[in-house]
Amino acid sequence: LTASAQTLVNLYPEIGPQDRVTLYGTPGLSLHCALPVGPIRGCHVYGNVAYFAARNRIYQVDALGNYSQIGTISTTSGRVGFADNGSQMIVMDGTTSAYIVTLATNVMALITDTDLVACADPVFSDGFFLFREVNSGRIWKTAAYDGTSIDGLDFATAEALPDNAVGLLTDHGEVWVAGTQTIEAWQNTGSSDYPYARIPGAIIETGCASGATMLNVDNTIFWLGQDTNGGGVVWRANGYTPQRISTHEIELILSSASTLSDCYAWTYQQDGHLFYVLNVPESEKTLVYDVSTQFWHVRGNTVPMTGIMSRHRAYCHAFIGGKHLVGDYSNGNIYELSDTVYDDNGDAIHRELTSQTIDSDGKRIFFNSLQLRMDVGVGLISGQGSNPQAMMSTSPDGGNTWSNERSISFGAIGKYQTRVIWKALGSGFRKTFRVRITDPVPVAITGAWVEFE
Figure (cartoon, rainbow, N blue to C red):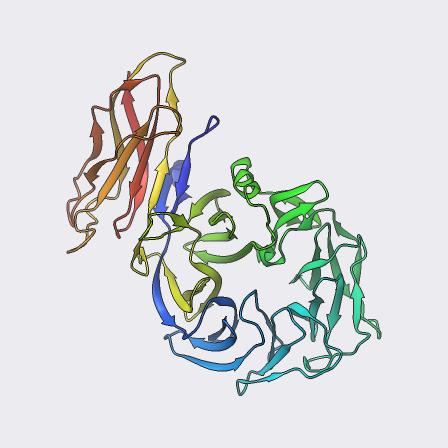
């Protein structure tokens, strides 16, 4: 707080002409369908349907909200990985049990090959399914276009350092093997034995804290990193060179968690913005990086009974039928993520903007007014939001303590001349301003200014 009390919660910036910044409300959640069991543990898109792992079951879900169970798996918690080769989909839950779904019939069967090891994070590359062996540096492959057949000698080991592999991803025809200390890029050499080998020089001396955070974003790879020096930095690859994209503020939040191994991420594109959504379960934080602006913001769901903000409900993302579908990390709900929905499945979205601290080198300041320039007259026809309120509070000590909130309307429906202005704000040696909005209405803030002397 000494450096900055600024926050941006459930709001994200968009840069327009003349570098004018507008803050928009983050998308809300509407129920797409409720699967009979939960939590949601992973998903995969094939054609115009999505497959979701919910507790110990696998469901097919379409864009209209219809769903059907196609099989069961051996575990009830932990991340579930999917990959497909166009005719088969492989499903892995981190145990020695793995499954093949014949996509033409949706018949799901247990892989019975006795050479199968504890497996996770399947990917598809050049006709093969590849997967990592749990608690090992080994990367296995199946037979070509046949995920049911595994040879007990068809594996190779990441060897830059003797660290365990925690993630696997394909990018531009390469297979990226993420360890806890390093990341290696492999390619198909065409060898008749094991065809994949490390590309000469393709070693990143920064490992991965959680394989569930390593994703293809913006034509490259993003991940939450760690190495022998520490962890809690978010990186993007520039070739085989890592570039830091997290800020000190984001890294401070990450450092508050005693473990990062359970972190997970998902990504989506909406309205020209490409978002990398990083979740920290222990800290109950969701940290979002906007690739288009290179700004971070925080998202979260406020628990109605307690008023405490937890991480965002979404565990994974699937885009089908023009809809962004996300699965709930705590139950079987699948939601549509939409920027025309202004609550989280009935729960209010708490949007918060905190300013920089205004001071004048120890001189007393008299604050006359604070005014927001924003979309007004956006109230609903009836119910909560028919007379939407912006709630303002101030801090005299850089964000450590806050005054009671003062509410002001930003316009019932059609009241387009509404002024959002608070007056008679007192005096002090410094002051920080915070504005909160919880009504289920569209929010767009294009400016704010304080009059003082």
